Length: 164
Image (cartoon, rainbow, N blue to C red; front, side):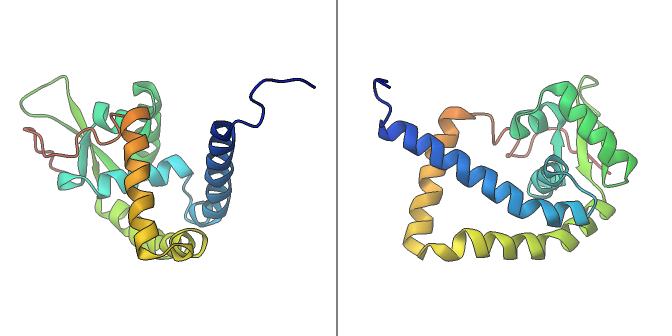
């Protein structure tokens, strides 16, 4: 076989990143599944929990999760049916609605987070020194800002406080 650039380190970097992401997702899934959550359900709850007022405009939540607007609507609908999220209309802009973490959503995170953090520590953070972790996080943010510039959309408090 005569393929040009088959041993290019850029391919290795991309392959390793894909392998690590798939491996971490597989390691985390049992904890989410035991809590009755999918990976995207957990990500949605976590992003809401880490946002101002534990609430995000639906369009910002879609941008942060990388879902389409219809995709994030389906996730929020499911979480709302389970009582983990409430949808709140914006009082000053009728076009906007917010997804807001409920008390039950916070309780679900309180149940899942300790084991999730333990898993993260076992397969990722404990493998790195403090300096390596700091460098790793900075590098990931640099890459994220290029490939997913909207990943922090709505991270700063907006003009429309959502009240659950």
